[in-house]
Image 1: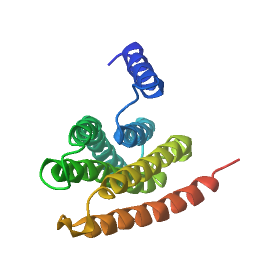
Image 2: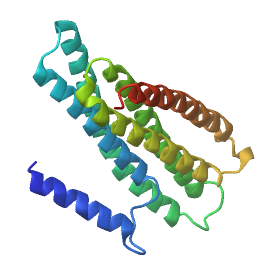
Image 3: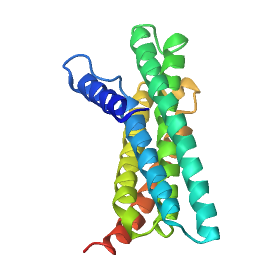
Image 4: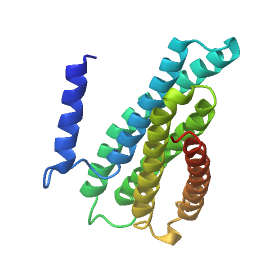
Length: 204
């Protein structure tokens, strides 16, 4: 992909989410933040590999890079799934708490939760890469980690918003899903704190 096309894609997306009445469907922005995080972490590993590292470090950097690129693909798919989920929920309004409405809300709550899980995985990659990519990569990794945490927060808030529309007695496992969301957030927040502390050590 050319630099010009990449910039055009970014501009189109920014225009889309900022235009009145035509913003990106709920939940997709968290996944987009994750894709940017994955790209930055992958780039940091790539730059470190170009500079040359020990054989063991190079192997680990390649593993991190491959995993980051895999998560980027997953998150791009979740952007589309999030848009579809939001449309399905909108189409199911007024159709009761069971049947089509319940299915739409369950799907809509699961997609952003998967986004949060993927962004949590990116935070783990950011943490692993800090000690291997070198000081020059600190800015990219720190920014990537911040975006990944934003994706975690956005995904969990969106998921819980949809879950709130499902009656507690529906038998849909809402409470279990809420606990899953809380665990992801708690672990992601702890990772973010560790990464920030590591980044601060390299500030001039």
